[in-house]
Length: 496
Image 1 (cartoon, helix red, strand yellow):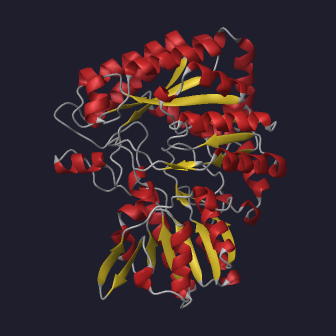
Image 2: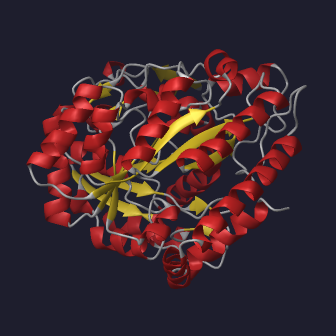
Image 3: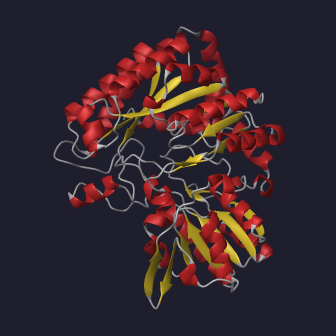
């Protein structure tokens, strides 16, 4: 069968962080499995056309361009990825347009929001099926069904309409990740993604401060055994930690570096370091093979999985920055409310070790959990500021957002804490959606504003003390005006 994967345009509210382009990793992974099963596959990425319309809230290809791509290929099945709840309306608009210009195609949607709320997609009338959780095996089964080779009752991990009712078949997670082919990089123009990254439109907008490189996103594991209430990964990837072998990972990295000239790898795993022997083996193998590249962990890793000996190998391997997920400095909030199961002493120990080894380190902090008090929040902000001063740990402060499919969303909804249930409207940078007896969204924003005022003072003082780095940053900002304007708007939002 002919299968076309489409990454839809994004809703760009201008108040959110700059759009991230990057490679469509999920589509590339599923496309590789579908191609391996013998199907004719193409990928259309709307985000490769960032200035296609005059609509400033629309980032990506115009509907006309998307429709033309569909009519040119005339696929039997079209796969649409919807990664974020805030992008649901854009994804639906795309499916409706496709159905109007080419009704013959079956439209299948997947992604975290579709997995948590399949009814919201199926009720639109423009979508034929939803693939739940992982798509590599399930979509191949769906294609077999559409080609007449498999009964729909034999397929797990899908949602569809049957006799006017929504039928949901729970997913079965892939246990052997080494059985999957490497992502289908050959289906896209990799140079276009590298070019956008060099312009400051890569998968991580902060890359412009590190001299943009030929960067790419990689995920080597799935699932998480922990129960953090704010995390939306469980509906999509489950609780069991599953991972690619070190040899598989090394082979993948070697392909990226030697064939595509990749210089920077973002490991987006939720638990890259969870299995310490595996992680250490990955570091050893890439060193032994002479694979030299920069890497970071922008999603954050657990600080309690990094001892000094392991961090020495991390340093040697070319790490550009480690990011750890701290969330809160209050033990009650961290382990009883958030359910992180993390030892604060080990967090501080990791910070000390990274500082000693001169490994650039940053940390995630979150404020505004249901059940948290203002005193708890102040404690976390004081901790974050002290760790920045003492160990040079760059803080990334976020306000808790009740994502669909998370326990935090259900808690907030049950207790009447949600200020809005419209999770499709995007979010204002620095503003929460939870109001409790202890705080309001306005309180949380004020905490953020005051915190970043203190942080900026430290940051500027250090830049002034190092004129060469300050000059370098200025040159980078001048070289990437689009991203500079967007970042300046975000920064301004924390001063109001």
